[in-house]
Structures are given as C-alpha cells and as structure tokens.
Length: 426
Image 1 (cartoon, rainbow, N blue to C red):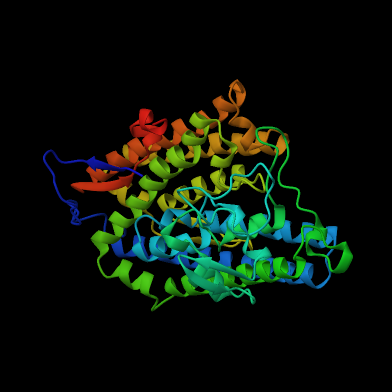
Image 2 (cartoon, helix red, strand yellow; image 1 turned 90 degrees about the vertical axis):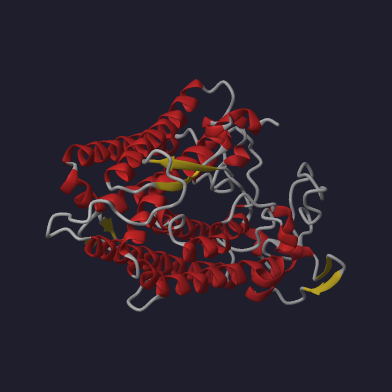
C-alpha cells in the first residue's frame, strides 16, 4: 500500500506532534477529548468481546449437536459480532498497539485452501504461496519450509504460532473473523451472481453423515479459531481499560493523541476503505475483493467502518445494550476555533453514512455487495462510488482540520486505486 502525506504547512518535512492552538475553550481540553476516545475504545472492544463469546457459545453448540439450525445460529452470531468490531477499526492506524495486533483478528483476503477443502476451480499452490491449497484440516502432518509439522491436534497455538502468515505470506490467514467465516459459510462460488457460501451443516456431522471429510478436525479447527478470537479480544479490551497499555500510551502525550485520532479517521476513510476495500474491487470487478466475501456481509462491514469514524469525531458510541458512551469530542476542539469547519465535518460524515447506508439498504433488499462490483452493473457502480466519493470528500475536510489545529503533517494510508490507478493493472 502507498502512504499519502498530507501537508498543512508549506515545506514541512517531519511529523509534528505539537498543536499550534494551545488554548482551546476552557471547558474543552485535549485530555478530556482523549479520555472520551479511550472510553469509547474500551466500550467497543468490550462489546466485541461479548459478541465473540456469544459466537463461541454458538460454535460449541454446533459442534456438540450439528444441525442446520445450529449452523445458522453460529452464522447469525458471527454477523452480530462484526457490528461492534468494525467500529473499532478507526483505532487501528493511529495506535501502533492496535495495528500490530489487528492482523491476528481481521486479516483478509485469505487463501482459504490453506485451511480446508476448496472447489476444483480454486487455484493450487503458486510461486507466491506454495501453501495456498495445503488443507490443514485434511492433513495431520505436513511440511513447512523443510520442517515437519505435527498437526494431529489442532490448537489455538498451532493456528497462531505455526500457520498464521506462514513463511511471512499475508494471504496465509489461519486465524480471526475471516477464518471462522470461511468455516461457517464455505467458499462463495457464485462469482458476481446472487448467493453467499453454502457450506452444509453436515460438514460438522459424525460418521457416515459427514460431508467434506474430516468433520472432527474441521470442528477442532473452528473451535480453536473461535477460542483464539475470544482470547485475542480479551487482551485488546484490557489494553483500553484504566491502566491498560493502549490508554496509557494515548494519554501520555496529549498532542500525539490528537494526531492518533486524526490519523485513524483519515487513513480508514481514504486509503483503507475508499481505496483498498471499495474502489479496488470495483476497478477489478472482482468479488474476492470484498471484505466479508464468504458471507456476503460486506455491506455491513463498510457501514460500521464508516460509523466508527463518525463515533470518533462526535465522541459518542451506542453500545450493544443500547447505552451511550459520550463525552468531550474532537468536534468540540474544532468548533472552539472554527465552528464552520466543524459544521462542514459533521455534514460530510452524515453524507458518508447516507451513502454507506444506501449500499446496506440495497444489499439487504437483494443486490449483494459482490453483485455491485460486476462489470456493467451501472446501478451497483453508482452505489459503490457514492460511498467512495463521500469518504474521499470527508478526508479533504479532515485535511483542513489538520491544518486548522496546526499540525504540520500527518501520514494517511493511501491506495494505488486512488493515487496511481494504472499500477493496479500492472
């Protein structure tokens, strides 16, 4: 990925953490704004943990007594778990502790053949990834880089320490939400046509009812991946509580903390969501370039990513139990020096949420997100580009906020799909 350097002072050459506006309104302090930001992070990760535990219980029930209903319950729990988690992604880019950890829980896309059986049309080993069709579930022993691996027992440690990003290949995703998603839905073989993955519940059945082979090992893998997801979220939730490392790092330098907030907003808005997650897939007309590609849940992932950005700016988050965490906000800091700019940012965020909401509405009405990516789908392209353009537009206002707060420059995540489109096809 490329990095987009945003300059607000001519000739600036280094990231400046100091804020030019040292005196905001007396009742709006940087420390108060960062406290709200950290409190919302703590609430979001706590909600992500709660919903992951619900998913864990549904997976345990599926394994104990496989049925079509039990599989659907696990799928429903997975979709529900994505709602709070996607709203945390805005914390990733400005907070190294989150960015260093995030690949364990939300890495995508993945070469699913590493994990389980795949359709005959699926590409096998390649020069880029010789393990793309390893199928750990079917192979209790295998060789990685000349080393014999005993995978007789599929454990969280095997997934995290041996398989995940094996040989440094990012597509070897063995853990996290998307590994669990694949094990619940299976491959989506519908291309740009209607339909998500259709894994039968009998892939978890016993004896002669088992389909796909190795049903006991598939259950072991699903159990290990789900348990690992829960433990990873437990760790991150603790980092944002009082005394946690993430909160301490944030509050240790309030100027740098404000930079972290804006970095997360701008990077997720621009390079990550508008670029890598939306524009790129449309350019390639590729259904594999959608975030939740097995479940056809991408419309929700995009919507809640956008909502997470809005949460940070407005300083408010609605928890899964309906309670609201709110407090002093970045919006207050901006309004203290430039009320017109604050109003502009609020308007841009609202426009983005309308555009992402329209994608969500149409997907739930019957045109899945991957269908929107199809070449010649004019209505689908219009929907996706509505979201892309709104995200880019709100990034322009975030740039103006950077300038207004006196920040010399911030690096926002970039994307070739936005910054160098010709490179996408090279």
